Image (tube, rainbow, N blue to C red; front, side, top):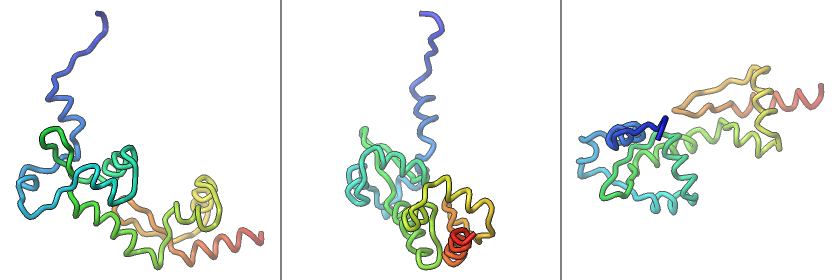
Length: 141
């Protein structure tokens, strides 16, 4: 077998366990951990979407007896971030839905306009009044 690389199992697990919770957090008795199926039911998403969600948001995880568990408080924090800013700011996805635009048009509009934004965690949130003003100006030009 030419050109086949073999790696130690520990090295592979260390590479892909980049969001694994610290030993201290894993042993914390007050921390609540949810299994993958619990997360899927809580958020109403598929298995593939759950994996993407926990990876994208860097949700701490641990593995016990071959089952992955995720920190409940971290998942709730991600959902609370969006709820906290929802009255004054839009996400790109919300702009797409509300104004019936595709992502490319939204990013193009944001690039060439003076829309104020806030970075909260991994989210870029755009001020609602600036978005509405920019879209209104673009319709009449």
